[in-house]
Length: 275
Ligand code: OMP
Image (cartoon, rainbow, N blue to C red; front, side, top):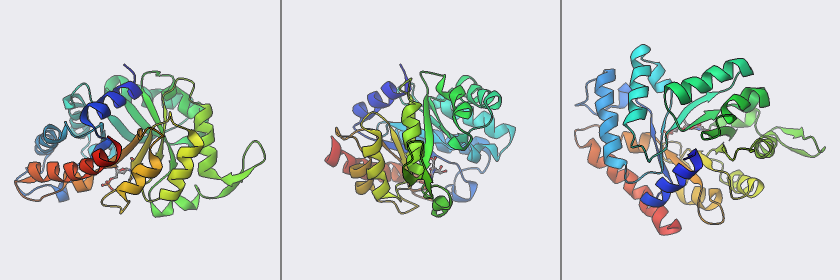
């Protein structure tokens, strides 16, 4: 089963387009959790167990694991394999390098870690992305318009596309991503903090491309607007990522119940609008 099929299956089974971000931060952990990689492992496994019927995917961000060195990589691998087999894991690593190097990044993400999809940075162009696209069953989610304030430094600059049209750079990326979608395994990242552009981008790429939408919760993005503007005509494929506001719902030992409560509040809105 490829990434998109697995994503659809999980979303329809759980009636949810929520992706919980698994970004462990020692300073935010509940007080009863031991502040070591094995303490974090226990914490993340509890959160997965308590939310696995509420999500369409999980998204561990590699940086939060790399900070612990070799133990962090082991933790990342263990967390990915702990996620139930019918729920896709998006490795958030924003990779991209010369082709020869991207090939190694792809092998690390897909063959070693066992991720179902990865986020990639398109700045270096097609030969930096094809080693990922070449894994036909894996999702390749391309940064298009990111949620951060400084995204406009480059992404909103007006540029001339190959057909001589003057458009913002993020639209060039979206149009190019469509051209790269020969294996039907391309997705885009568009921040929830950019709702107007999100709607414009959904129209531009059509109904078949998953859009990963981070920025709801801690970054202030609006859930309903993200669903309305990011979903396709059937109310699908807007993957709403929420990390901190689900993971760190409580500093106390009731964190599992509180994480579930926060995830369920988001999913209830999704269910009332989309399912
Ligand atoms: P919270 O703000 O805690 O919900 O986390 C958001 C997660 O999404 C983090 O792992 C970010 O690195 C990631 N992210 C963004 O916040 N903005 C983007 O534009 C892209 C991503 C991403 O690629 O997932």
